[in-house]
Image (tube, rainbow, N blue to C red; front, side):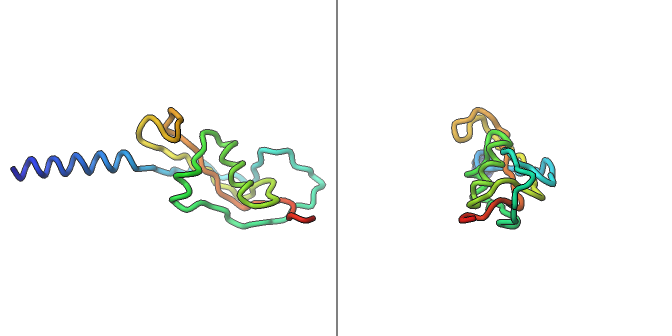
Length: 120
């Protein structure tokens, strides 16, 4: 009887950990990254340093493409145009469907947001 309960406990624990687990692996670091055209004569300023997501936000903001992940971070700061000193993470999600996508790899980007401050 104790063996059956132990086996059941191990199986339930394994199923819960696999269904809710997300693994974030750093895929690379970039000096500058943007999904928009940048004016070389623009008067860009550092708007917010080290914009990153909490673990809870990471689960919410995983994107299917790197472009969407970059755009999410830049839009998080008003006036943001591009990222400097950025890190790209690959989110590996066990299972077959996440937020309606049939994929197990998604992306998160973090970094310093540069742009033109609002009102200028």
